[in-house]
Length: 313
Image (cartoon, rainbow, N blue to C red; front, side):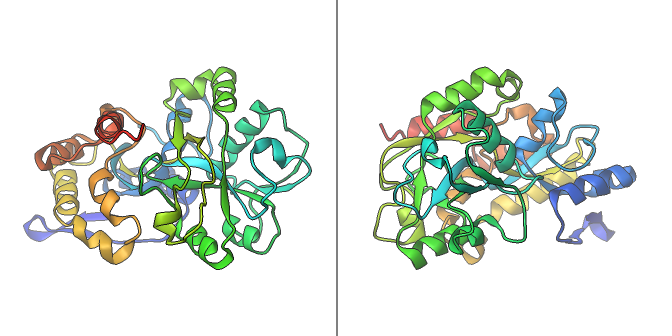
């Protein structure tokens, strides 16, 4: 919750909640939509327009707009401790943990599974008592679906839980999704593609190891993953523009605080906190102004500009 008090001072009331709970809260309290900032995966919102919903609650109307991104340019990928699992074709007969029902890892994983003709050929776990990293560590699953932040970048990183698992085991590795499978998923799901989902992201041998601080190759050969799950902070399009501008300006002016909270990705996050696979129109006008004043790139166009300036080919 965001409150505007005396002297136009902006204060926050922070509450830890799930994405589905946040959506339900706004639908139950529409009068508070314009003073609420909440977090949704990028893949949650565009599919609302084509009748798909993975938030666990009724879609919000009007469609929320982006502010900043917690985990920019993220993609769905697979981790395993089994050296014999080299590609999705090796999932056959295994037990795979595909995230929770309110996370877009799960529907994307199922779409990719269908594209590779593996439906029903392995045990699928959705949700459960253990999160994906814990399930893999305890060998309750042979493969788990997760995400990578700053996909395609030299400093791309797994989440903190998987970085820790890589350090503890010395054997965790990334399993690629082939470009052919991603293209098949595109052909099978044009509504997702039209909503801006599933761009293929290339990975290179040796990626992820630097962020995890390990001396072996988590990514063992060049490959791809399917992008679609950037985690965005959002608000109502009717939230006051001066309030949004002030909040975004404060964040942009104090980006160095990232080193205190997530040092393993801070250097890149400072440059890419506006990078999401969405167009400029998905950002709140107050946020757009703040990014442009700070000369910080954002939106899909920002990803493309950054990629062109930092090509790894």
